Length: 242
Ligand code: F6R
Image (tube, rainbow, N blue to C red; front, side, top):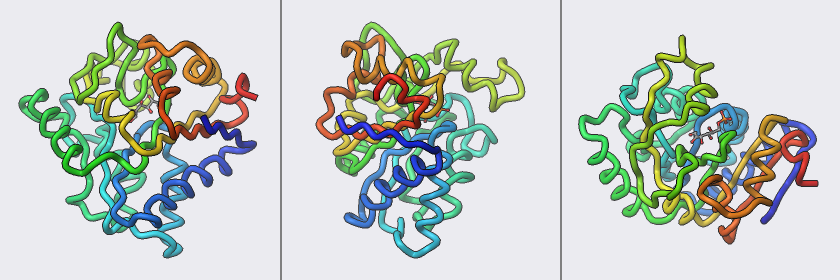
């Protein structure tokens, strides 16, 4: 595992953005797996500035987001679709038809999962999958469980996950109870996985994910089996890794 620890958030964000833009420069038709949450916001900011300098174009790239809240229409202010437009897609030259995010308000979410898996399969394995890390070890919304699911599926969000994400909603009641997430199989199929974590509050789970046993109790620990895992941490999150 390639673990990189950065002194500042700025240098971490920049390094992550450089890996992602490099992937698209090498292969303009790259397929990128993307994440939401607070972790990637600064990375997207750097990617936008790399794009604005004319260094990279996303015109031929394709993206697949990890997950979406169940029940939220794409236009909802807290949907991951809105998040991606706000922090990334509205500022680059990606073709809207090449953007893929599960439809959280699809009438039949199981059918939506099948549709999403077919799209991913047709696109081929991702050139790079960007991941944040949940405090309980979730990646995408693959929550700790007795068994993990390979394909896209509907998941009941754990209480701690809803609480962690409540900061974006008016109240805890408004945080969706379910989400659609791609499965662990799709994540592990990516050619490169870039896991990013920042902050003191992630230090323990970073240790469990990277140094602990490989167990479905900590879904991110399965990343230890990935041949090309790159981990980028700030000093606080990487406290136990040095
Ligand atoms: C987001 C996602 C989640 C987050 C994780 C960490 O698309 O799939 O796994 O990456 O919950 O969230 P932040 O970055 O807000 O700490």
